[in-house]
Length: 119
Image (tube, rainbow, N blue to C red; front, side, top):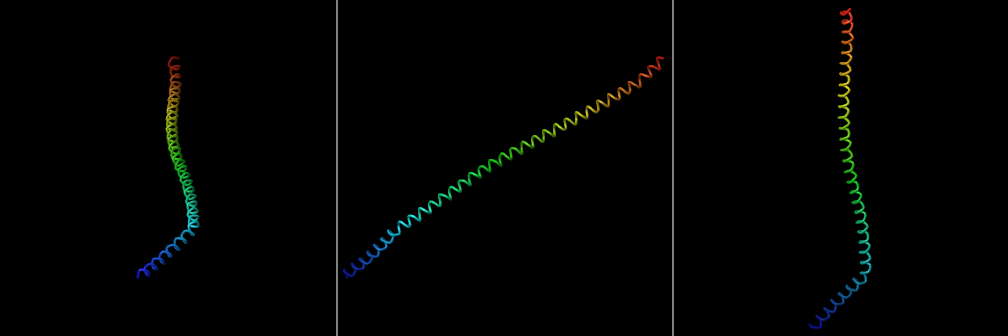
């Protein structure tokens, strides 16, 4: 029985050693596959970093666009305010000119009466 058990262990040991030899034979190929996979992953990481950089640039551009749109709104509002102010000034000038014409007409009408009244 002891001999039989020893042979069983010997067979198990042989099987284990064969498995170990097979693993050792395949190790360089597995290592190379792992290196290639790591290289691909590094390239993907670089691509993702590049995309992330472009997204950051895009976000910055969108922020600048929003700022420019806000400035444009402000300028448009200021322009509208200036146009309203200009319109009010024109209206005031027109009223002033109308009043001046009326005064001149009244003055012109009043002169002949004075001339007639004094004559």
